[in-house]
Image (cartoon, rainbow, N blue to C red; front, side, top):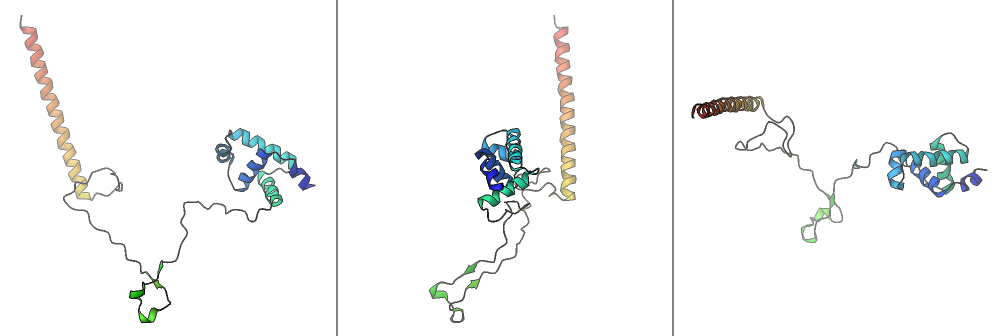
Length: 178
């Protein structure tokens, strides 16, 4: 009776169930099929009614078994995780091949990672710059930035006060001249 029910599924219902089988949500399926997430839900619900099941994953499994799917894809395996691999095997060129290593592959030894200190002449900004981390200043550098910002703030303040005083003098001078 199952194969008869599965043949009654529409092509869109089948596409939705295949993507459910691949562990995609309705929100992830919708852009792939060019429809709204609510429409995807309606296709899946109709397929579940046709197949006589109450779970979307079970409906997807039924379709996959009917279509002969080999294995269900891994769950919770992000695609951006690089798989571990063996160190590169290098075969020496003919002229460089040592007598003892004939026919054997050589392994490249990993070089330890070394951090080089940044040059002292470079001005390090108190905020994250391109390629830097958020908190890459030492305590002395932080204090120097605080002092520099305080001095610049005081100069700006006194400059504004002096400028406002000059403007007030000019305005008073304009009022007193006939």
